Length: 456
Image 1 (cartoon, rainbow, N blue to C red):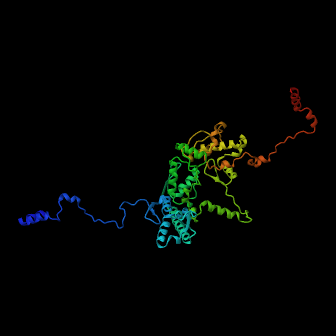
Image 2 (cartoon, helix red, strand yellow):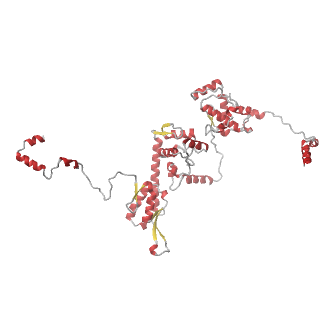
Image 3 (cartoon, rainbow, N blue to C red):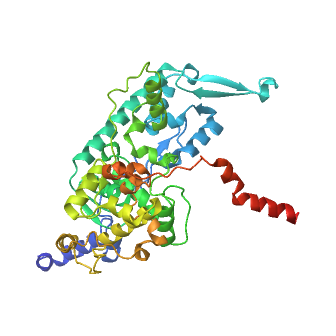
């Protein structure tokens, strides 16, 4: 269309058009690459940056300096050196950024001396060498109220986060010890680690930011660091053996980095879980004339050697194994004359064979525990123990399951004997003291004493 219009122009008109092309509003094709085809705007405030947003920052109370939230100590150092202001008990401030922004606004409204205590240093020195520092602390009612409000707001945010995690059914996590994957709620993974690996970080309802907590622990293990003593080892197998033998499958309670993952640390301003727990213990100790008549002890449930059956008392468990599996541990202990350590070896041996689905009576290995239990019941091999040299080995001093409560109930005392054994009439032969003088004269001790005197 532009070409058609150009052909219809006269010579004069073409000259005029040529003049227009060379006019001030003409843009040559070679210069078209430098054209700006989008609107531009200047920064709204001087010194503003057009870079992408970085990590969240906290401004200084008095100047325009900004510091990352993670570098809080740098900001405090800056305010002490440059502005001579000290904030007391900074660690007790629930939200440091909001706290700073609040006082930054207040100091623009009133002089700092209306809020802060003035501390004069070098008071005995000449006036020009003296210096004043300002202390901002919760002695000031306004500061105390601010800290309490920030604490309440933080507690509300934590409780809301905890409730979301409790109701979350889209959780996905991997066990740190067996790499098994879990889906659904976070409690499934936490209960698995507590039950199968004796690794208990607390009840799921007491934990907040669970995903971050598990990632923190996993990072330590990936760095070959023990979770309890926090020592570093050369390889993963050495770390696993260390945590198993030293019973270090737990977190270090003195590591304050874990406090933010427990709701109890957000309940009271300026108090850790240890202080809250200590106060509860003091309240219990202060109760006069405690009545323990309604005390109910929670027994440790012991698990059967051959199935998943649990009983609250060891006597019930013995009866269950005897009636269901025809395995009488008390009878075996009595017939073989087993002491405590030999009983431990036997229990650990049976536990390992059952875990491996291997019958110790006929040495047949099965594909599943269900097949193994069916074979044990049909073949009556539960009481068919192998030779003592098979299970009386040092390796069976170590428990197959670290939380095996049955091992804690074993004993070689007479209290474990059955009623029939206790009622048996065991003959007792007393010493004949009627001829005590003749016994003294014919005693072999006289000959030994005489021989010793002759040798000396």
